[in-house]
Length: 223
Image (cartoon, rainbow, N blue to C red; front, side, top):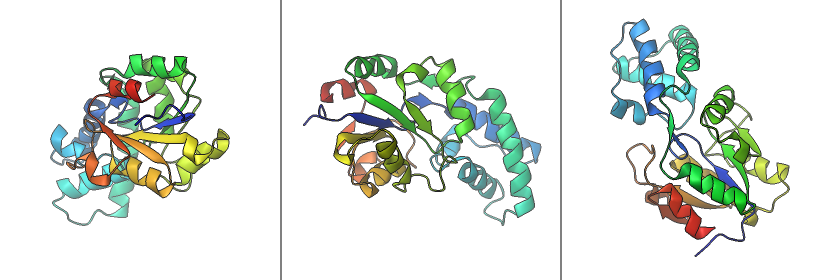
């Protein structure tokens, strides 16, 4: 099997291209400590990533409050504090996974169009791409707040296909989370799941992507 006939590769960001856990955990724990709540371990925080910042804050508060009700007032204050805290450390300890830079260079040289579809808030995407020196490889990117619907809905993927003037069968989604694979399936698009990211302690193969890889540079063999 190969995907050499594809024209557009849509990548997830956190857990696929980058490991952002150290900075996400620092920001969420700054928020929890500010409200005199017990901080999370990185292992606990990992389980709450994938559906965007709102869910990350909500799940973290519920966990710290032992699943007591999170009031609207507390959530708003906590979310604002988290956003400010993450803005200060957005790419402090975040790093590219092994093989990402070389593989992006290879795919770019091959002429593939590449975009990023993440549930992370839009404002944080470009600073990370700039700091890690990979922005030049991507034609466009969407955050979880860019459109009314986000992954696992098909809308962001369909948006890219339309924007880039590509047929669905010429597009493929690459991600580490069930949200990525389900979004691709909802868009009738093929997908590649990476096994090393954040997926709620579930193996990505459970969601039946077209192909599963354990290392990012394995993509080279398919393109």
